[in-house]
Image (cartoon, rainbow, N blue to C red; front, side, top):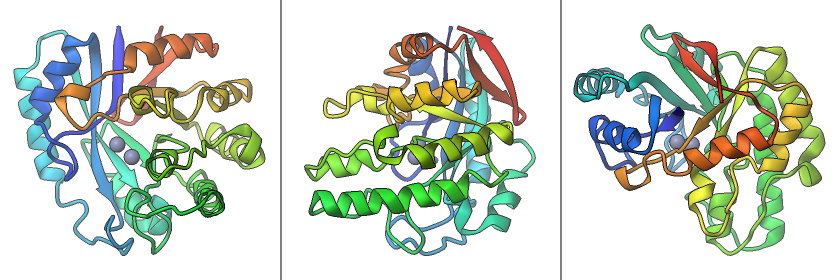
Length: 272
Ligand SMILES: [Zn+2]
Ligand SMILES: [Zn+2]
């Protein structure tokens, strides 16, 4: 039985299909427990400045989730979460959002540096440029790892997608930022939090790996990390839960016996 705990619907500006349609597509690919995680980014992705309206979509999310549940097959469980971006840029606001009644799951993401546009909006002109941004990204992940307002840290190494687009392949690895990654993992583990295996990279011909890369996920496991969710990070029906099956195989290869799901913000372990 597969699970998908990172998936978007038209409640996110950058996604294309309804929750009901996404859910049916995921079900067709073997998923039986899934959690929608539409974007709630504290900053505007174009400017990096605070977006006071970022949580206005919550009623829409609730309504869409209810519609998807009503339309779903009886053996598909649909949960309702968010992908909370840049919690470290406004911690009180992030905490208030994360404490909202009705949330099953909160992913902690970092899509942009403080006061800077989203990594997808930035342009990269050299390897030196990329390394500089990667270091700043890791520093902010360290900040994020000390907070309480999320359940798992999302797509560690997310910057790779966009640097690769501009011709520079710089994965985040134990080799280039091992000390910081170990500190991040120790922080998360001590707080009872986890990481996600983001399978979007498995759909990318350039990356062909999970985000974070498998060597980093294995190190997390070695350090005692047990909480790990798996997500497709799909934004359209064609991608819905694509890569999840392979993700589960990789999880087993990395020594995990359980995948984590969240209900009402509480982790539960499912044997894989
Ligand atoms: Zn994200
Ligand atoms: Zn996402």
